[in-house]
Length: 137
Image (cartoon, one colour):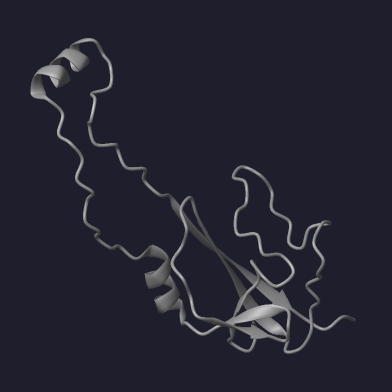
């Protein structure tokens, strides 16, 4: 907000959804939501940052503020690190494919039995919009 606080708009106590369909326009709040976004003091420049991913994002530290939104405790650098962190985890051992059957399957253009699955790559998006708020009138 204009005071320099990081406020999480979605999900919130009135809209807990954290999944939104891609390729569609997201209206906040939507006609189905049970909340409004009133503009009030302190007025000034604000920055709206959008984080989106095809896989769950890392957790951030937030506390409930005014029974409506969450006050984010992490600074921008920490949020970036937590939402895009890389970690290694051990592979689950799977039986190895027999080389002869792998060659036969490749020749027949069929999947190899017991071949390790190709991991899905997560996509990440971040963008920001600058907003200036002023008193009415």
